[in-house]
Image 1 (tube, one colour):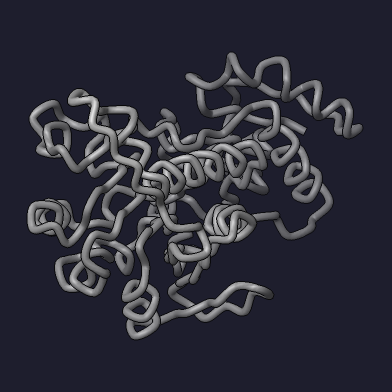
Image 2 (tube, rainbow, N blue to C red):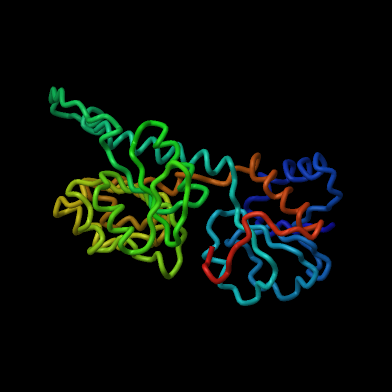
Length: 307
């Protein structure tokens, strides 16, 4: 089996780990960074790759994306091979830690103590987590894991997804009215949806107005989920108390972007979660074995839905 690793910038992280994982699984394969397209059986890929024309790869059984997001590849008309996105346990753990950390930061009002140049003695105690409703927008692997972690700390979590879901122990809503219901009581909103035409500007001026005054927004999902201008207006009006943003329409975030200077915005540089090679190789190997055996891929992308 010939595997093309078409993500040169990431190759040093995988050069040793991937062959070792393949050997542990008993898979005889050669992993290369260059190959005759007609001979390639599997493509491991990142959307920043040099590979943009999949037409010559007539033998390839699968394209395995190294990123959770596939919006930069799913519309490629030359890509006719099955495409799998990366659902990496390490990435999930990192996302959960970021979401829980920043949710607790805002819930406990940590900024008041961390940034307190006037040495103000403010003995105000926060409510218990059970009194701080959270709306989790997106109930995929990342959203559900983050929701469960917040539930474990007694935050009442309402989940919302574009299609109806039933998840034991979690209130699940869908559709426009479901979104309004989820937002109408949320003091913390977490956005963990993929970028698709349907999710772009999901949080616009109208929907931000549905929030209780003073809600907090955490966006580690995709930059275009939020209308930037509408968010800035909501922050200025006090409708939204703070926004902690990890993802942006343009990255790195331009130095003149208003988010940098806004006192109610925290910018984190797309660090909420990352694919970690030591755990991602196990996901890759599982799908390589399935492709070899003619089985459906794990985390197969639905092209019609864009993720």
